[in-house]
Amino acid sequence: MSKPEFVYVTYIETTPEKLWEALTSSEFSKSYWFGTEVRSDWKVGSPFALVTDGKTTDTGTILEVDRPRRLSYTFKHELYETMREPATKVAFTIEPYGNLVKLTVTHEGFVEGSKLIGAISTGWPAILSGLKSMLETGRPLAIPRAALGKEELTRS
Amino acid sequence: MDEVFKALADASRRSLLDRLHANNGQTLNELCDGLDMTRQAVTKHLGILEAANLVTTLRHGREKLHYINPVPIHQIGERWIKKFERGKLAALSELKRQLEKRDE
Image (cartoon, rainbow over all chains, first blue to last red; front, side, top):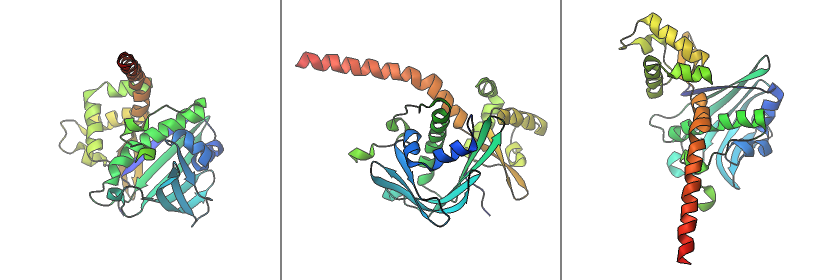
């Protein structure tokens, strides 16, 4: 059993139900996930996709759905050829602590010498701080995609 | 955010974070290996880093693994660094606008 490559934790002043909604609503995800829509019907075995500006960037399959406690899916990058690698696994765990909710995100199963891993490691901290800001203040962080080394998809 | 700044205001703790950044998901033994710090000191520093949410732990079989959690560092970046860069970017685009206006 290999260990997860990344474990991210953030404490958010919200409810498990609102956080679940934020993680699974394509309208909501656009506000903190660099304009990306999360698309799925969130049933075990159903397809999962990330869509930015009409382009599918990543795909997967839903593995676990336990609303509002745990969600996991496989994750495979599709857009850039150099980062097309075997499917990895993303898991979200939601635990309430008083008026806070602890969100743990693990991402695991990268191949040896993965090219995708670099993009993933800069992506999650930004997505999670944007998510926290959006849920707590109603405003996302205005992070330009370029600041994260992400190209504007519309121009590519 | 105070805890994050306090946790980062120590060279030993920053070096522990660097070690996790280089090799994420280590046991206490692995982290202590080759360090000029007692096991107790490492445990204490890890406790402070955990309280600041800069390090998170995960049970993996019988092992307890330590992971760097960069989310609070990202939040500091947003709050204390990007804010000042925005001013610089606005000044540059204003300069560009002024210079281009002269060419018209």
